[in-house]
Image (cartoon, helix red, strand yellow):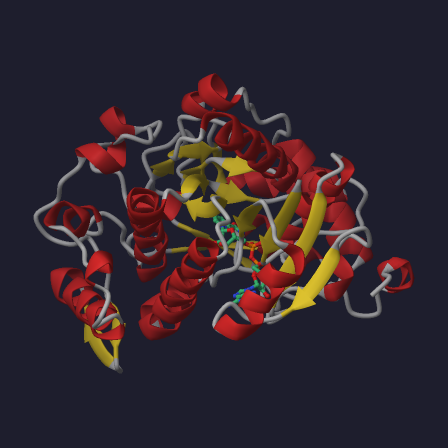
Length: 395
Ligand SMILES: NC(=O)c1ccc[n+]([C@@H]2O[C@H](COP(=O)([O-])OP(=O)(O)OC[C@H]3O[C@@H](n4cnc5c(N)ncnc54)[C@H](O)[C@@H]3O)[C@@H](O)[C@H]2O)c1
């Protein structure tokens, strides 16, 4: 089978491409290289450098390769940035995604696996009842007002329902002649759940995939990843973002001297050690999850959404401890106040993916820290001056 992987030169995409190649899929990567790296792309895969906003170029890629299915990783994903520049996220994560779905429709490419995120769940209403988070949470919870935190719309501070309405007005303005993309009342209610514009764009993509299923029979699976960390065990590919934002990467960057101190944002949470708890998942487990989802989709021809997490929570202090054990070095930390809007707990219920896709995470927090340390300590500047892959790379 021929698989088009958008964003396949990025962190999770490149690791998934490696797994696809290993399992003998014919892989084409489409990536703008805005945050991805040529060197991260497996040499057995083809690379087309192009942006999803460029309809003509993307159509050409479809004409050239005629893919059977798409795995879509291409998006922006910085939660904080999405609150300061919502238009940027609306354009790349939604408008460009509609371009992709339109081209798939035109070219009769019927299957898509899509990166989604735990950010679609916002902050669980009742931690005792809602954690671990099940996929149905998004169907069952019907807030009357948007849970969006404070952010900026055209430089003006705004939050909640107002912020959501401005976002939706802009969405409608972008697609004036596309009545089929209009959102129904229950879809708008659902979009009230996320606390960030990033989360909203990803949930809107899930809603759009359902529409394209009803309209054009494009079958899709949304995979809602929890907190991703770790690198390929080979130490050859891993996360290479210009600025680390996830806890494990920041802790490693502190050891590598790129960050002065790691702020522990709140020690007064109602958890055993007082710090926030998250469900951490390794990208190699995600890669297998994508392959399982693809097989399932093609066999069953049925759209769906699944959580990908371990189902186990780790605290901030446990993550730092895992990094210290992996690196055999001390992480410098400082206590800081809680960050507005951070939930106490975020843990997936991955049982649906277990039952339906026969998927289960294999890597634990120690594995994540060891693989991440191996990658970052051998590539402190990411792919810069990374000769090994360059020489292996054919194109
Ligand atoms: N990393 C995480 O912790 C995490 C958690 C949950 C969900 N996700 C989702 O997983 C996906 C991949 O995340 P990642 O961490 O690998 O990010 P990344 O930035 O490393 O990879 C994204 C890739 O997409 C490419 N891209 C972006 N916009 C594009 C466009 N318009 N056209 C072509 N290419 C484009 C970038 O160049 C990059 O290579 C994203 O959709 C993200 O929302 C990530």
